Length: 103
Image (cartoon, rainbow, N blue to C red):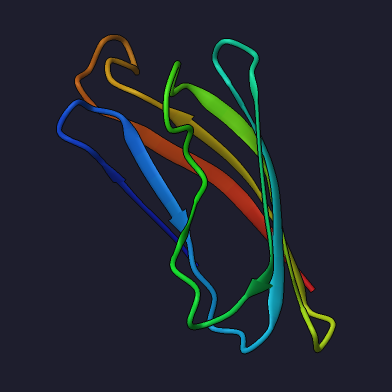
């Protein structure tokens, strides 16, 4: 599951959670400055705190991929993009959008 919201400054705040008892999560996010943000958790479980997918600093316009796998062989790939305020012709909103493919 991915949870997204905007903070008080109009920046996207995105976290991933799992309902699996044992899983892995791997991700690569590129921010608007072209910097790479890499994360992994090979002990991703229902007891794990959420894994933050949005950049913690810099330019919050970002895009990337997040991959989840479970011990039962299920795989989910999420392509995600984030955009901080102001976006969409200078509207004061932040956006999170993407697609998911599950097997």
